[in-house]
Length: 272
Image 1 (cartoon, rainbow, N blue to C red):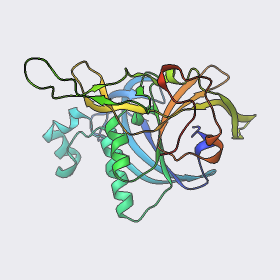
Image 2: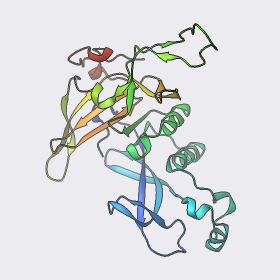
Image 3: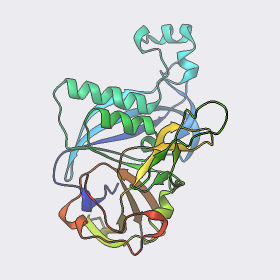
């Protein structure tokens, strides 16, 4: 998994991911019909949230916790027969499990420079917020349709001529998908290491935005959150990926300039 090489310094990273075990049987804890990544379809399997500490080419697994599906958590008899402790008979989302495991590692004294995860975790605003509240730097995958605002977005409370006062603000601009924000950015080809056949490389671009992840408004949109980096990754095979990151800007990034100021986005990345 490429972790945006131009933004990563040489320090330990905590990689949050899934480990999926195709498995049949009704008595193996957590087995249920759910999406199995290694098979590319829904199938009977167990899903475990894995945490791996990595630096360069040396991964060290330090956390692995089973996800208990709702069908299991709601069946007390089945849980008792399988020997599941009462305190673990809850159907947590995998993002919740990941945060609990991060807390466990921090309490045990583990330290790491950043947390990285794919869009299966990064799509959750609660997961991203949870890492920020813990003082962690992070870089996660997000869907290409993740809505964002420019850093210049402002909130207004229009005064109603009649009726009750407005309870929620209005944003000064409409949010747009992260994919669209990066269309006019400056893309740069970067190779981060050599693979089994050839160097691993892709086209990358960054700007500065505020993700739409705050309180939900009546129109269905969300208020802007704190500034982050949206990162585009385009590979020669046609694969397109998008990410958000709270990494601090490096000296190289200070010299990057998008091609225009379209849609109100700044023409130059700025530090916080």
